[in-house]
Structures are given as structure tokens and as C-alpha cells.
Image (tube, rainbow, N blue to C red; front, side):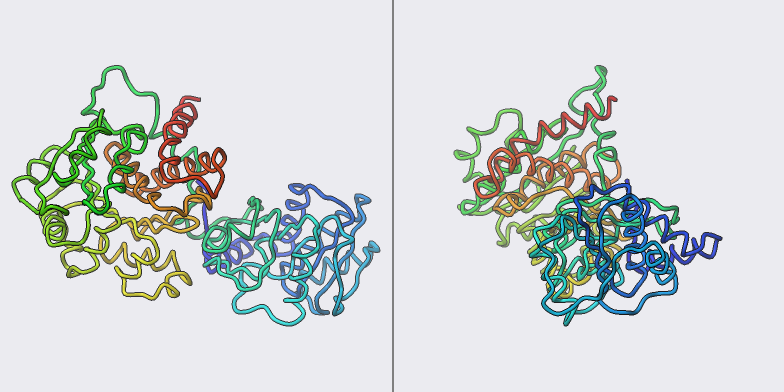
Length: 499
């Protein structure tokens, strides 16, 4: 698990490292050396530098390239430099590294590699003037583009950008920031890596989820075990109008192939003819209905939830009175882990906040941006500008785990935060969230920590989506294709755990 630092925490970590005895000039040298060593260079190389410490990293890189005989040129966007950056600029000049200032109308087509050292992670606001022109020329150059620290123009905390460098490789220094993953980031970077240069983080509550973090939950299972060992779970949803959502969540690939011992599929009785032919391993639990949606009966829900560790509620269930009463009862009476998705989140947003905070169950909420806007009362723009902080605040206030969907997924309980970077464009299709709910309902039945269960489920769902896109393409793949790839991803985790 890799630590992720906010821009403020990264700045504080950098300052503390310097205060503890490693000079900033030494850290700049380490950064440039690490980036130089981790990058494939296609000469000639243009190193575009701004005026801050990010430019200093570029000066170190340029000196190393020049010393190795690789044709390179410094292109400075203005004549200013930081104190430490100025030191390495002086060394470049002593070594004879070619240098010039940016001029209007310049192009970069003659270069094989362009290094972006214009802005670092501290950038805020809009890109204008000379910098906007330089970024456009970088993106039009056809060269291999390497961004140092973060793509210039990209916000280090939110990943938002209006004008931004598009990189083939982004090399972060010290630690990743949230902006390397959120919002526009994945469209701006083809590849990203991090270089450890000895900066010790002052805050480790946020981390990137990797395969090695998920694999231990999927170790080869013991012979001396039975279906109850790995948990009973219920998937509660469906309506006459929306029968596909619950079927996707219930597909063996999405639930039982994710490790659950027994799955109860609770749907309105009106769906019985549609659902029954698809149910083999799962247990069908028909619920009273009004001819379209469920009609709540307390006795039925008490029987349904009597022995289950987890329940996922809301996939296609509708927002009628029966579903609202069912959710109200679950919040008051169910004592396991309750995953609320889709229509369930709409119903939750209409409830008094005290019912959420005082729930008898452990809540895992899985909203997309619009659903989270309804839950929090925040405008979508406000959430996009601060996805991590918004999710953390809501989770802490309501004693819940929030799984906020997006290009990368934010999972938090308000104290600990995980970012899941798996997933792909082809998953922007109906039913992807339903597949996630099925995986999460299974994982939460045998992964003891709800936060880690949610992070693991999001990682698996994203990886299964990536595999589906590889086979079907981003345009033609659907949520069923993702569900069909879950078993292969879980099997790779089992193999990873056994190594």
C-alpha cells in the first residue's frame, strides 16, 4: 500500500525532512537523479522549466542528460528561479547545457522527449498566457512527454484541470497526491510512477490500494471449512421495471465467485418467473409486492436477515413506500453490515440524518457523484473540487464507510482513506455499480474490516472491468462482461496470496 499525501501534507513532509537534516538542495538532486534513472529517453530532449522548485528538478535532469551525451536543451518560460533551483541552473550553465527562453510561436516537434517541469503539485487556478501556449505546444508536439511531480495545470488535490499537460509518463516525487488519480487525472497520464527520495510522510491516513493489499483476503481456503465459514449474504432489490440490476448483482460471477458462502436473493415475488431460471447456487427469497415493487412485511425481513453477515440493498428496488419502510427497518433492526446502493441511496437521502447516525448496522454507502450530492446537500462541483475531504467528512459525521465512485474510487471511514485506481472507460455503462454491490456483499461477509472489504471489492470490480475492456473494447463491453471476468481476477489474487 503506497502512502498518498495531500498537497499540504506533502509540503509539511518536505519541510520536516529538511528540518531533520536533509537540505532541500540534496532532495532536489535526489529527485532529478531518480527521474533520470526511471525514464526512457528519446533524444533530442527539451526540458521546459517554470520558476519554482519543480524547475530545479528539471535542471538536474538536463545536467545529467548533457553529461551522458544525450542531446538536450533547457527551455525556460521566464527568467526567475528559486534559490535551490538557481544553484542547479548555474551548474547547467557551467556544463554548457544549451538554454533559451520561450518565445511566442515556438513549436516542439523536433524533440523526441519533452520534459514538463513547469508547475508542481502546489499549482492552483487557471493556466493563462505564455504557460497556456507552452502546454498547448507540448500536447501538439508528438514527442514522448514526461511530467515531473504532476502534470502542469493539474490540481494536486482534486485532479481537476482546464488546461493541462498530457503525459506519457508522470513521475511523482516523495509520495503520490490525490490529484494523480481523481477526476481528469487518468485521462492526462498514460503511466505514472513514484520515486522515493527519503521524504518521510507526516500523515499516513491515505493510501493507494494495490494487488498485494487485496490478495491476503483471498488465500487458498482450508479443507476444514464449510459454506457458513465464508458468510451468508443477502442481495435485496429489483422491481418489475428494473429487474436487470438485481440480476447483475446476483450473478454467480459477481457474488459467490467473489467468495461468499451462501447468497440469498431477495426480490419482489412478481420477478420470480424472470429470476428463477438464472438462480442455481443462490437461494431465491421472494418478497411480498404490490405488483411492481416490494411491499414491506416485517416478518419477512426478520426471517431474511436472521443469519446473514451482510446485506446489499437498493439495486433496482425502486423508491416506493415498501422500499422506504424496508430500509427504515434495516437501519433500526439489522445488526450486520448493510451496503446501500442505487435506489437505496435515494431513499437514504430523504431520511432524517439521525436515522443514519444511529443505525444498528455497519453502513457501507456506494454513491456516484449525483447520489452523493443528494446525500450531502453539496453541489456536484463542490464534491469534484474536494472529493476526498467531502467523503471523509460525511463518513465521519455519519459513522459509515463511504465508497465514492469516480474515475478512481475514494473509500473512507472518516479516519482512514483508500484510493482505488483500477477501472476503465468501458465501465461507464449501466449496471457497473450493481456488479460492484454483488462483489462487496460477498467480500464484506469474510473480510473483517468494512473499509478494507470495500476497497478490495472496488479493486476487484475495476480489474474485472479492465479485463472485460481488453476483450470487448471500451464501446461494446457491458456490466455483464465485467461480472464474467470477476472469477479470473479473484483467482489471480489467490495465486498472489500463495506466493
